[in-house]
Image (cartoon, rainbow, N blue to C red; front, side, top):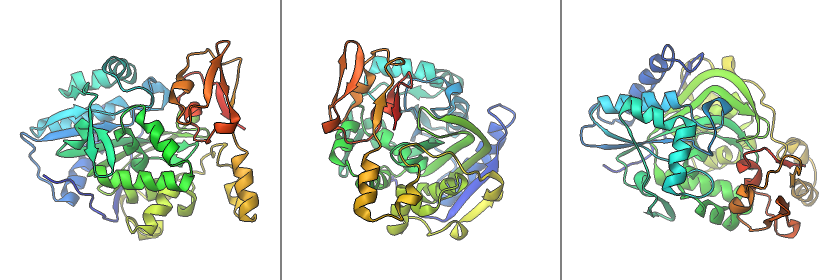
Length: 369
């Protein structure tokens, strides 16, 4: 069965008050039914390989709001198990991609419990294979169906992470650093993300907006209750909906803007077919990441001046918070960081301002100024 994204304009938006067995199944299951119908996919999946791809950015508990909530993953896995599928939960987080590290990640994020309760298998195969122009983790490349479950968050580099950005987790471990180094320009990097999502072709896309994140996302922001689940067969159309719910104009989120240019989604929210609730009920102006704050004002300046001001926003180590774990050093694509006297240090001349150090620091010891 060849995977291919259906470039539909139809998106689903349903209220979901909290993460409980009272609300999640009654909201998620009808949404999954509808998205499968939109794709023209079968109801029965006996013998087929379904991979649930949650956002598992880092080893954080569900309460931190950084990763996909385990109850959503559990319910999606149970749904496809009941249809006869072989279900695997798989993702490659930031940092190293190793079975022992994956085991700890699954334990902390609640995925181990989700797998036990649903009958799904946790992926521990850390091999990778070519997929078009990319190298991706093996379970996603070999899946008959990818079910992508992301969380709605702001993002220091990309402004927003939702359905499209979630597929960056298909790149194995530290190889993500190579893509940051290869595409240091923000627009080039976001174009790569749009193309990577198309290659992976997730046909079922769910965004957890029950509790979202604003500010310095995707790991160091503050939580914001939205109370909704969003879904679509088309991750690009879904991201257009999500960006609007965060108060962004389509051109403010580059992955959305590029998707519009490529014809993967409509030009504006009013061209979407929203099934369910009115998006206005869930729309808030999210606090922007420090790295992208005042971007609207920069558009009014000459390009050379605006470019210089953007470059001046840089990651800074808060030494009192830094515990010298070295996670930022290991995740730095440009290899411009080192530990000095058990504290992280950034060599400015080589910094490409990808903010991976801020994204993956477990102690929130990296800020952007």
